[in-house]
Image (cartoon, rainbow, N blue to C red; front, side):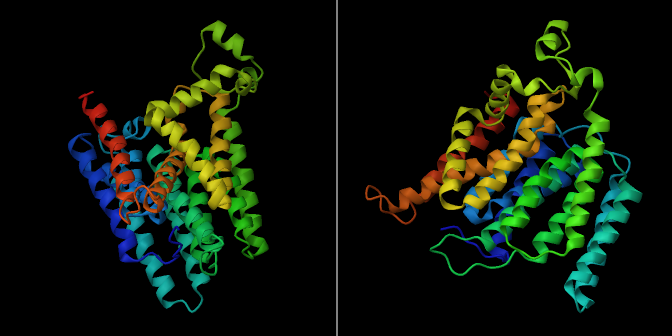
Length: 381
């Protein structure tokens, strides 16, 4: 049974910190990545590992490393440091200090959280702007998945678990903050909002009307940004056959007919296989099926997130499609990891093994995936 504790302890944070540290070393040594960029990427890995923390320390570390070593994520390594990197770090430090002070000395925690949101957005707009940064998108997606999954596990545990907790302000308002920052950075982050909205609804938390109004305004703003960025009247009305015939296989726009083409669906499967091999594709399917059985709310919310990005990927013909699909791949990691988790649980209860620590065999087998990915990066295979 998944641990549904909604207040992460030091024991919960250590695996995520370990995954981030290991990934940070690989980014620096193997990827020759500048320090600040490597640190930002490591924070995304940490968020991914936290999203998997309920599946055990070993699997959370392995799942985090699977993200770090996936080709679509690894492409961010190397290069030179951006000019505003130090300003970004300074802004984040300032926001952290303001947040700690606001929560510590505010009699109403929600007021403190509101102050954090306002200051964070103000600093984001003034210092970072709207760069459509892939690294920032990945970071915000990982932590959004953590808050969303953690909140759903707390508020909707299995029937044989203790009484449910609450989808608290740290989940709802924290997730809203991440969504705002994500859409400001890249309007494509709007694709994650349907899953988040469904999560709010399934958590049965009473949210103020202004919360939903803010979410609706964010959707309108994000959809407008997607139209301005990825829509063209000419390409939208083209058929897939005409695009292929003209030789324009990589156009940075959406095509309404794209999702009807069978080869596009095959290409979506190939994208997952390129990242995590055939085993990863099979584990993802199994993991989603097991979520539907034991944690249906988590299963349906992650499926909505996966489906939103899948629909975009089927209709988008840009050459940067693999990196724009990183949120989809992160959901795939959640499903893969849960499949391995359920296999480990089966081993511990099977009459053939009947060993409390037999689940470590499943974790050891899962370690082969990031190891294979690392060997692929260094050119050993």
